[in-house]
Length: 153
Image (cartoon, rainbow, N blue to C red; front, side):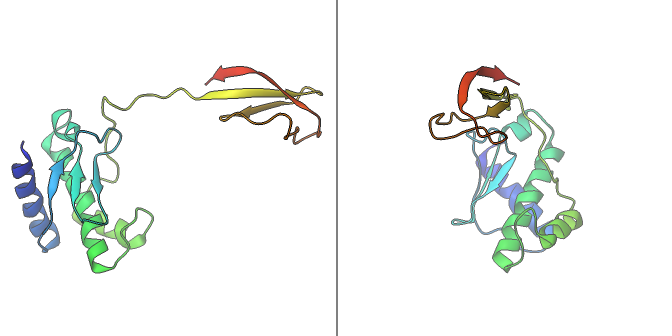
């Protein structure tokens, strides 16, 4: 599917599901890795992950298009357009859009790495970022911290 075909599909879904025209641009954006689509507030354009079509079926892409169109139309109408808003959730249920995009092959299972610190009394402290051991002390006993090592979880 080309960007022109995507534009036509988005305009068609907008008229059928929302009874409102889509007046901006819809394009595929290969830089999207962890999301199905994106609504850009400043330009009102829509970007879609091409993997939603290549790795999944057309119905999945239509669900993502409806999701992004809910953001689009609610924002232009002055309604709640964020995921947490009740107006967004109600409209998404009404049109049958997908709440979440499926995980693509580009999503990597990240291993979290933690810095491990121990105090003089043996309490362990796990942090994702390094801390200054001269400035900070153990939160339980207020003794000096020393860097013990690094672990992966």
